[in-house]
Image 1 (cartoon, rainbow, N blue to C red):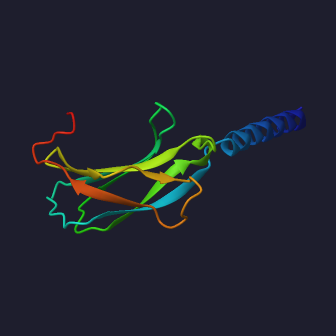
Image 2: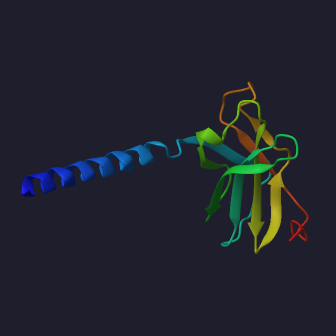
Image 3: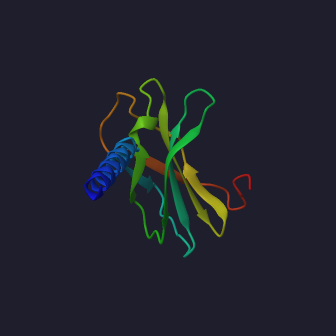
Length: 142
């Protein structure tokens, strides 16, 4: 009888292990996208400045954020960031762009001049987002 119990426990543990491993195999497959953010003019950042960089699915009116990176203690541009995203969220028929904004004292002070397209069959160099200053009284709609 103890031998049967041992075999049953071994079988149950083996099944549990196989199910656990199968569940792990179905998880997200993360990839990275390196990005550069620059400005033609010097940026004097405060201690609380925060730079947000987004990878966005810009297909039609969808505008879904695929990845985001937030940076603090910025120093002088250019800034380099890595966006980590789930590769299964990328559809070859969709349009993807990079956007960036710089906030200081909770106020939007800089944003990208134009969204930067990625994976559009163009240049394979490091995508570069150009920040431009916004009016100091801008609150970004907040």
